[in-house]
Length: 164
Image 1 (cartoon, one colour):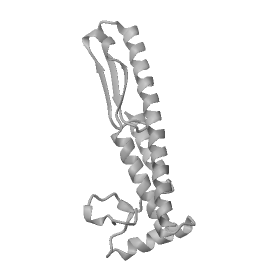
Image 2 (cartoon, rainbow, N blue to C red; image 1 turned 180 degrees about the vertical axis):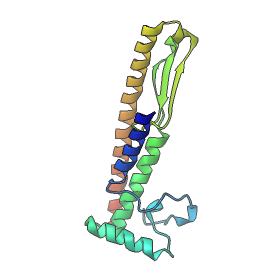
Image 3 (cartoon, rainbow, N blue to C red; image 1 turned 90 degrees about the horizontal axis):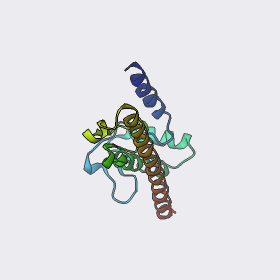
Image 4 (cartoon, helix red, strand yellow; image 1 turned 180 degrees about the horizontal axis):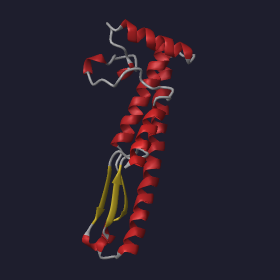
């Protein structure tokens, strides 16, 4: 339990050093999206000059325009959503062992299913099947993360063409 909370704390701390990390918490207000800018959730509210100034400051420090910075933040949010929504399965349900997980590492969504057929395999065989299912799902999750990253890069390339 202590190790688990330490891992969570470290992953949260590591996420704060990301280059395109949003300045403030993610909001779900539909009216804040700008229709043509490509900024999406990265767009500051019109009446929040403090947030706009902070975003300009961070963008300048990174050698980017505000629009490029907003595009990067929006692309990051889209990629995170794709990874969170990803569901992959590993294992062989016919042997009684299967694993479902999302694209995060470590996973936020993890469902391990062991049926009576799996239990009937015995302890050692069940452990072997479970380890195999976890590895299989982990590999598929890694592939899904890579696809989400490719999709993010394509999105940025397409949006940058529109900015030029």
